[in-house]
Length: 116
Image (cartoon, rainbow, N blue to C red; front, side):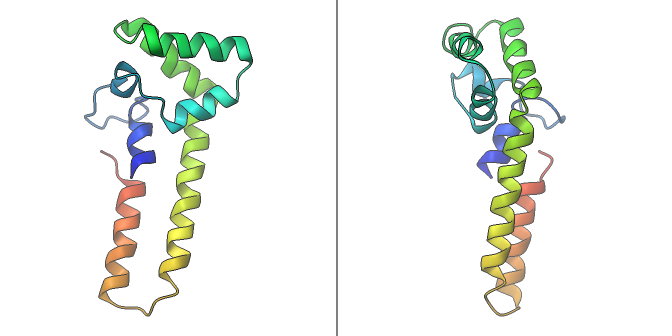
C-alpha cells in the first residue's frame, strides 16, 4: 500500500492526491531513495537540499519530481512493489482455496493496482 501511495506523489497519474505533498512534508519516500541511489554525489546533495529547504517552492518541487522520473525512481519503486505482490501471492497460495484466500488476494491486487 505505502509504495503505491508514494508513487502517487510524483503525479504520473491523476489520483486526487496533491502533487508533491510528501516532498512538501520533507518525506524521503522509496521512489526518491531509488532516484538518489541512481545519481552522483553532487546531484544527490543538491536534491536532498531541495527537499530539506525548498519544500514551499513549486518550481523546486517540480525539479525533484522530474529528477525522480529521470533517475527511474518510479520504475524501481514499482518493480519493488510488484516483487512484494508476487511474494504475497506465493504465500497465499500455500493456503487452501476459499473465501478468505480470495479476499486476501483481492486486497493485494487492490493495494498494488489502485488508481487513487
